[in-house]
Amino acid sequence: MPKQLPVFVYGTLLSGFHNDSGYIKPFSHTKTRATIKGEIYHLPEGYPGLLMTDAGKVAGEIVDFAPEVYEKALAGLDELETYYGEGDSRNEYERIPVTARVQETGQEVEVYVYRYLDEAYVKRVGTRVEHGDWRAFMERAE
Image (cartoon, rainbow, N blue to C red; front, side, top):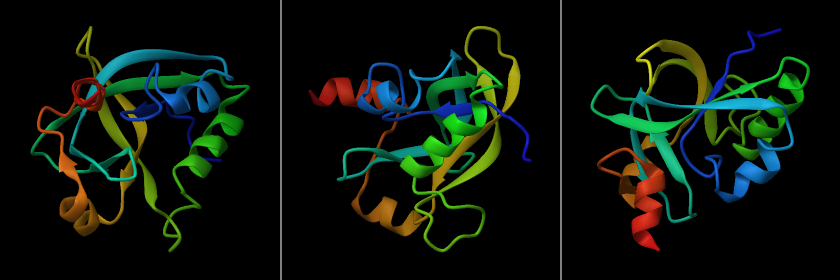
């Protein structure tokens, strides 16, 4: 069984967005504000795509699920993110371990994050979120 790493969320799974209520809130968890290295693009489908680069910083939340609900919660996230397993050709996103930095303390934590696989598509049709904060981007768009 893979390690039970917390999950870094940066888009529709953030507190207050529509997927938070169906995929995070039903499970016992804690959330901590944090950042990771990378770039995000707002896609026409209405959600962000994350590209792993050292060029930028992405704001989000570390979700740490309770051990007794971890596998069920992660299975739901994998389904939402169209992740069937490592190297599966059907994957839209890939779940990978990265280092996140906790906003309040600066502590570094190993987390899972879902990165978008089709980088060319993201750069062609997406709108780059220059400041890396999808919540702020969406609030300005309303």
